Amino acid sequence: MHIQLSLTLTDRIIGSAPFLYEGAFESGIAYARRLGYDGVELHASDPSALHSPDLTTALKENDIQVTALGTGRLYVNKGLSLTDGDKAVRSEAVRKMKEYIDTAAALRSIVIIGCVRGNVPSPDKYSDTLRLLGESMHTLDDYAARQGVTMVFEPINRYENNYLCSTYEIADFLHTNQLKNIKMMMDTFHMNIEEKDIGQAVTDNIGDIRYVHFADSNRLWPGKGHIDFRQIIEIFSNYKYNGTISAECLPLPTKQDAAVNWLSSVKELLEQI
Ligand code: LER
Ligand code: MN
Image 1 (cartoon, protein in one colour):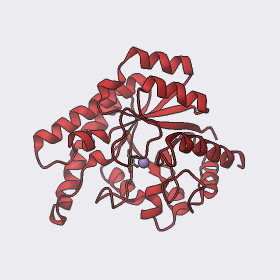
Image 2 (cartoon, helix red, strand yellow; image 1 turned 45 degrees about the vertical axis):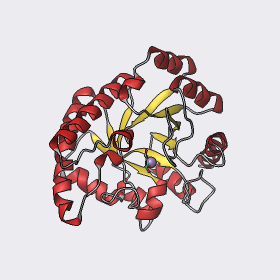
Image 3 (cartoon, protein in one colour; image 1 turned 180 degrees about the vertical axis):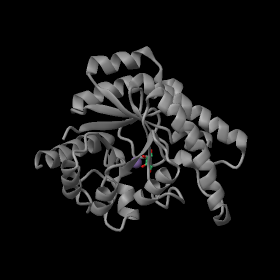
Image 4 (cartoon, protein in one colour; image 1 turned 135 degrees about the vertical axis):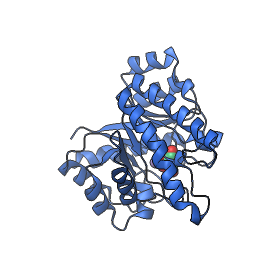
């Protein structure tokens, strides 16, 4: 099993976002290397923030991979969603997502689709929302295929997004829409809320999973809550999951404490396999 361990970096933390570094990406890349991470997951307010030559230099000098680009800031900062009832807003969301895909192609990274899916505005709009999401996703799937980029769709718990919250629902959506370049990711914090049995959900969906966020049941680093990470890692090992596990947990008691403890805790779990 070859696993990359990645640190989440953002240019600006908004609210109680689960990121472990805030500031210039170049310094964050050097910081991730100093702590012993293999990669970084970048959450930028705009994809243009990821085009600087300094960023490329920092990645090379520190031998760090960009494992994924987060896109949630499109929704959180700019109110853009792939299912907005207004076609102009939807098209703008798709256009910005294509910019993330272009950037990911240059950086050889994955693109995450999370809360940019938007929400179902009222129960009677559920099937309309799914239809709009399918249309936007087909456009992005074709575009990502042409750019050779993999995208991953994240199941997010019901208190943050009001539809497609579990791994099974995401798998069903991806298969029903026959999306080829859009796979699934898992986030253990969300799974602890949405899945009946986390281990079974990992086993049942492992064929679609291409990216992973690890945080414990209370969204602190693994070991601080009650999720059985050893069981999850055993499943990864049995199915030879060769991908990234990313440190997306609350920056508590400090960002640095969480980043250091997340890494030592996950390395210890991996060494036991
Ligand atoms: C949202 O809760 C989440 O898990 C993310 O990956 C957001 O960036
Ligand atoms: Mn996540």
